[in-house]
Amino acid sequence: MSESKRHEPTAFEFRAASLFDVPALAELAAASFKVPWSGEMIASSLAAKGSAGLCAIYKPSVVEETATKSHGGQAGSVTGALKGALIGRVMADEAEILFLAVAPEFRRRNLGRELLQRQLSRFDAAQIGKVYLEVAQSNEAARRLYQQNGFETVGVRPNYYSAGRDVPENALIMMRRGRFATGSERSSDI
Ligand SMILES: CC(C)(COP(=O)(O)OP(=O)(O)OC[C@H]1O[C@@H](n2cnc3c(N)ncnc32)[C@H](O)[C@@H]1OP(=O)(O)O)[C@@H](O)C(=O)NCCC(=O)NCCS
Image 1 (cartoon, protein in one colour):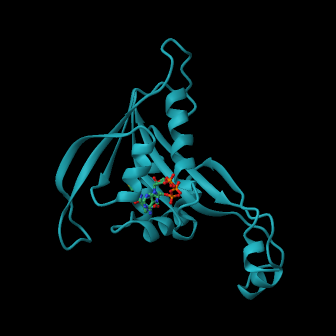
Image 2 (cartoon, rainbow, N blue to C red):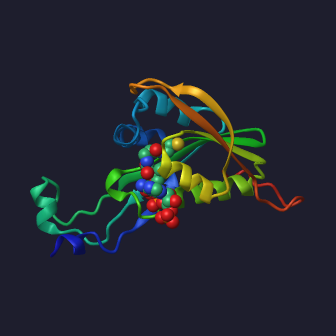
Image 3 (cartoon, rainbow, N blue to C red):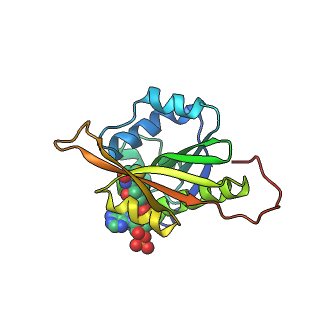
């Protein structure tokens, strides 16, 4: 079986993040951020009141037996692997996106967009009025993703990011207004 066949069809399952996901989330953070979140930081953000975490689990339906064997796994086994995640937090009728990352080998395949849109739909269903986030000014990929999904820059924190950088960098504060019909039933399922 060819390498490309092994990765098709690609299937992702989306589910809520839990404390069991902390090691995989820390690994994803290490591959994604200049100053990665520690396991403790991730665990405390997931345990915090109002936490809203979403994971994308990769479940290829076709697994090359020999490839699995050569990696020491069980031949033919299909196990899910966490390849993307978003962690948000709801405070009354506002929310914040604290963490969004996609594993490097799965970037530019719409997974970041999917995670973001799923979480925004949940915020809308819960009638969250404003969603905020902070993003490094130079992070073109994330800024474009957020702009495409209704976020606009509403402020700047000068030299906000300094750890792990030679030169401190500004953080942009971005905000998206909730999209929901007024008077519709509020859902608590975020
Ligand atoms: C930002 C990130 C989550 C995007 O995830 P992704 O799955 O690669 O993004 P998608 O494939 O869903 O792309 C959606 C849109 O984002 C933008 N985008 C994503 N990657 C981009 C890149 N390398 N350059 C420019 N724009 C990019 C594009 O507008 C894209 O839409 P398009 O394909 O229609 O042009 C991913 O690059 C990542 O994990 N980066 C490291 C962690 C990070 O910076 N997180 C954000 C912190 S605020």
